[in-house]
Length: 608
Ligand code: F6R
Image (cartoon, rainbow, N blue to C red; front, side):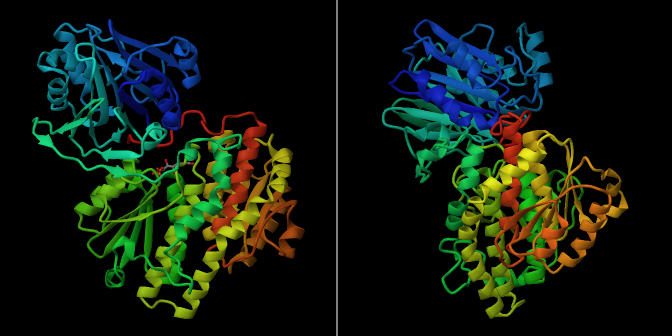
């Protein structure tokens, strides 16, 4: 949520900062701004709307400034407006800051600043920081930032520049992302690696409370008290092409098509040729897996849906009870767990505030915590006892697709290993499932080649005002994900229900106008689902089924069928979700909507 870019180097900073913002735009797109440290002072430009508005306002002017900051915002305090856009200046116009996150005590600080004669022009929590730095600037920008940090409650990352020290940018973080990029005679701050990936892959991950001073020659780290610190450099592997659309119209479509590769990479080296699973890199041994008496999954949104899907597989295969909760509920409901509960926090970004808080709570209760994450160095990977990485590569489209199916695949590996360690299934059965899982990336590839059929269905139904999704077991969890995709990018209301629950209320929604999407792969519960489909048909609603190739029963019952290749029903959710992603995608694009930047959303939700 919100993207920060900082630059201190020898080249003109403006195009570098603007390009960095473009690559971080998925983090927020309500407003944006840039500040450059020019010879005669600070020069800022802000604009409401996505980055196109900022480019239109400042794109033409040239600048030789080699130090500056940029920000793309997702509003927390204060509506999107020019005044509330970052950067924020102090009273003198000699200090400017950008901030991501929340300063919880800003009202109190604001009142104190106003009493001391400051004039604040925005409604944001961030602006107070510029004025607090102004009051302390006598000792230099680094000292002023250090002293200001001591006054702030909340979780934030911020960067500051001063006209009086034109060669430096100072940044700090507390429970919000900020990383340093180490270039050749140039240094970067950013909320995420893609911002500077075109210039360097050498990264320094900050710890909470680090205060960092960047100049072209390098970075100096100290703690809030001013004591010097040493931080290691890491070289990251992500490919810069990941931040480009590579011939696709949108990032979302590109990422949908990257799923076979993301799945292959996630399974590589973990799912062995003989069908067994090796998760030794995670550090959880079989001894520990045998001691687990319960699994508790916490996550938000699409990551929650991945957890729900695999919660069925973990119980069915490993015979361990699984509980799952959305992280924002879990953290406030006084959950009961202890050292024999394995808590799995699923978060592709590794930054989601509620999931991080839930994981922290679990660790405090003495539970071992495993993070399932896609981003190296992210907060979740530092907070957890164990980390299992999905290897989906950078995901920019706000609607998660390839990270979702990679999460399901990685969790299935865990389910298989758990079952193996506990002797809950025969080795032959687990190897059979392992072999089937190895074939899944290729099946997803085949499925993507059937996109024309999905598009045809989208053309037929894109004007509908409501979609009901029905499924049972893992199919129900897939419905939640399909319904979430459609509502978030097409703004069409959707409801996903366990099909057996339909008679207890939602059946009242059915009429001839509302299509019903049914996830009906060949699972043991399929015959029950057939009765539910009959109930839908009896009310005159059109059924769009997602079903396994060759299932004649479904062919007769449904107006439209999205066929998926046959595979074991525990693995089928990786397949059945793909046509639902594409259906949502096509409906939204037919409606002319921006699928990569749906309204009101941001890719990473770093606030509660
Ligand atoms: C929806 C979507 C969100 C995220 C949720 C959690 O398409 O992407 O629902 O899944 O915000 O994000 P992470 O996985 O980063 O914790």
